[in-house]
Length: 145
Image (tube, rainbow, N blue to C red; front, side, top):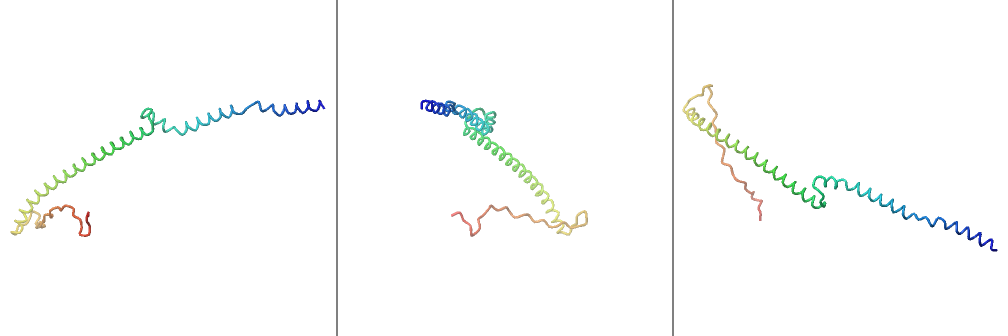
C-alpha cells in the first residue's frame, strides 16, 4: 500500500509541475506592447500637431486653429470689401463719364430737336436718365414686428 501512495504522490506532483510557471508576466508584457502600439497609432495626428504648435493639449491646439481660421476669414472679408470698393469706385467713375457724355448728348439732342443731324446723317436716340436709386423697402405683407 505504501507503493501505491508513493505512486499516486508522484502523479500528483506531475500535475502540479506546470502550475509553477505563470503566464502572468508574459501576458502583462504582451498587453503593454499592444496598448503602446494602439495608443501610438491613434495619436499620429496629435504628434503632427505637436510639431506645428508645440506640445500643447488638444483643446489649446483647437483654440489656436479657431483663431487662425477667424483671422483668415477676416483677411478674406477685408480683401473682398476692398475689391468691391474698388469696383464701385470704377463704376462711379464710369457713371461720371457717362453723365458728362449725356450732357453733351442732351445738348446735341436739343440741337437735333431743332432739326439738326449728326455727322453720320442719323438723328441720335433720345436718352432718358435713370430714375433715382431707391433704398430697400419691405413689401406690404412683410414686417419686422
